[in-house]
Length: 70
Image (cartoon, rainbow, N blue to C red):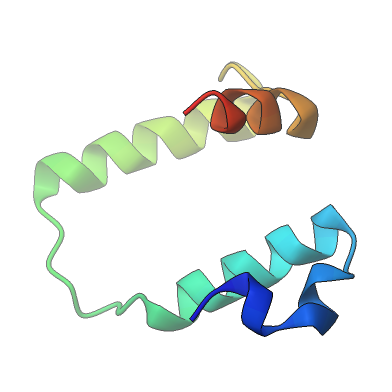
């Protein structure tokens, strides 16, 4: 299954496609997967940095440029 199978989705603006991709991703992730204490600590640290504004952020355009290089 590819995006080409859903032409109506291809017509959506990028932002809406990203939102849909996130929703699809989250629907497949199970909260029952084990997370180690070290993983939780790293995630908590990253989330705190994001919330405080100290984490490096990039624009959507920069993300697209980085992904297109791969």
